Length: 341
Image (cartoon, rainbow, N blue to C red; front, side, top):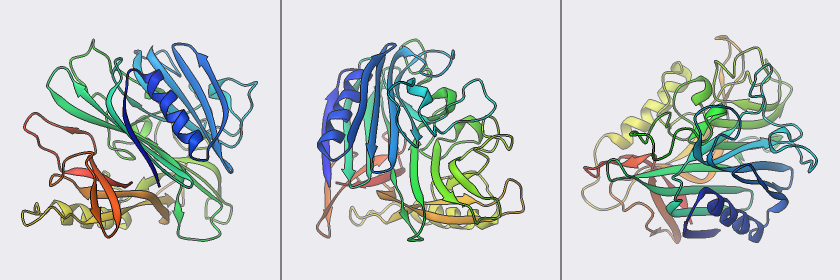
């Protein structure tokens, strides 16, 4: 396992440090160049391709209010002659003025107080810590991509991409001109449907009721409606999803109710749960949820017994816990994750 934590002075500086870390840990840099106010980065590990772009008072994909952050999407290849948003086999929607959809997260123009990056084999978790100038709160943002620990050994692809934001809103409205710091801010893989469903999955399963060969998304409405090639709905079943029907709700509710039932006041231990990604095998209510695999190196955890970002050692492994979104002025936070260092 590789791990690094530092500060970064801007979205561009953060992306550059992420680039250097990934290259040092086995990822291939296919492309790195200035574009707009930021930089574009194209990286590869085996058959997994991830395309990242930093933004400084800019919107990577559309004309919505400019912001600061990093956007990312998955593709099936790399072509240096194509634009950042037009790589081969990109996670895209048809029809749509935005074409490519992906995930992202927001940070301040002045960068981050700290970033934490974890990598091991075929995955990468990036977590940043920033301050809200309007409330003195600490906020955490997420970007994660890699290959799932698939339940079926013959599962083709199994690449995932999740973030705090999605679609046209990759880096939306995080700047010093707004009095709220949480507009369109959702848990990784959670939030509402449609453009606020920042979770993507790349699978090749031609034998399902509704065959899927390509990128799937979490959302079910615009821009991920049934009229386009992202009609499959994917969820992380135990990360605070809205009602999805009894097939998935009983798993989510059991997990949520268990870990929220009572804070551990005896010691600093907390139960961790694997983050399981499911695929819906239909474009209507006739299908069922199929468990695909778990996100490696990241676990759903009640974290209010811990200091965010600190190292805790159990069973010979080092763990670092983080709140999903923020620590408010009253120092309240429960939902979170733990990453293996």
